[in-house]
Length: 256
Image (tube, rainbow, N blue to C red):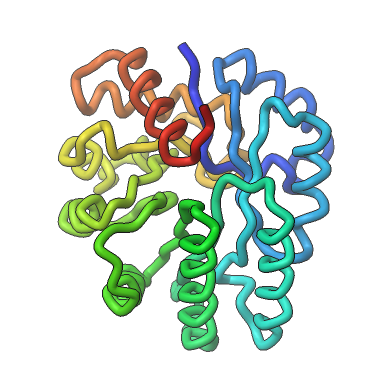
């Protein structure tokens, strides 16, 4: 039984003291491959170092995180463009819109997302979308782009069943993480409503640890807890969840 963690930040400083041990726990849990989304120019070097140290266990994304979109976003986008031109990435991410904290750079976030979506299309890469308190805004942007279908994943999906079904209709998969294990999580209804063929497993480590580790540092080995919760909600085996979500990730990110 093997898993793919399609979204984790093992290069984050939260793992500086025990990164090797954390990786080994993931491998022992059957997580053979982990995808590393980028944040901005300050994170790329540490991401690249981890990838080049363990190239068999990691794949890289390149992108500008929406919360890193500030007044200097043009320079940050140039950094992303340079990385994409160099090649070696499985997705453009993580990109998107995040209006949870404030809307100061909403216009800039929208422009950054639009441009990176177009770059992904030009490069033949899927996108990893970060959407927080901005589902309406992102869906409006997707309508403006006016593509018949899209390739990508809505990372750490937190929308309604209706929004989930709309995302799937547009061609997106949904990234399911630790939030699905939280009490009264609306994600439980989403997981039951959306076909397993449209779901991906992710941890977003070091963030959003599943129960019983909620509030603690997250890590990729906890992917089994997320998979088991999905299995319980759908009334199937964890083996079935592992097999299908791994196949989904391999197809979307061309990992074969």
